[in-house]
Length: 133
Image (cartoon, rainbow, N blue to C red; front, side):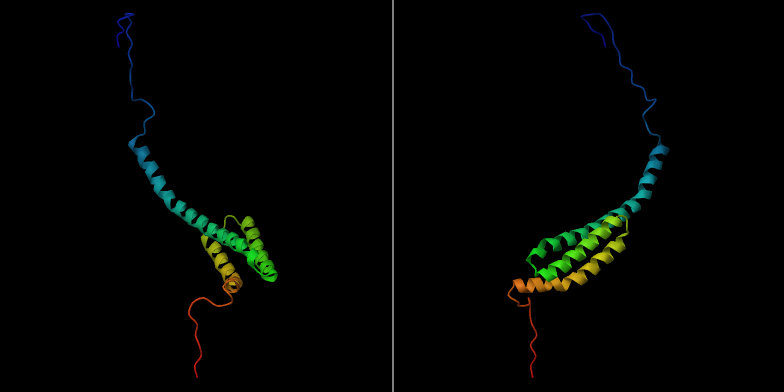
């Protein structure tokens, strides 16, 4: 570039000698990304399963205030035990978290049902079956 006012000439030179990836480097990086995709998916599923278990615990503890004291104590103890287990086992696999969630749901399910029935006047929800002679 020529500057008329000063009479000086400046120029910019662009070269292609560094900072570029070769075709082989790009192919290698793509292969690595593909290789780790499966690991990333397994990790995502593991974290999702852990989050579901944790979320269930906190949801149950939130509604425990509306329960009879005996049920509330049992429920809180079981939830606290599971939270403690979670703290000590933060890297378990997805299947273990899912197993713990099902176990907790089956144990606490009757207590939760009892609470919901008492809130609805003791009447079970949905259709009932009557015996006929």
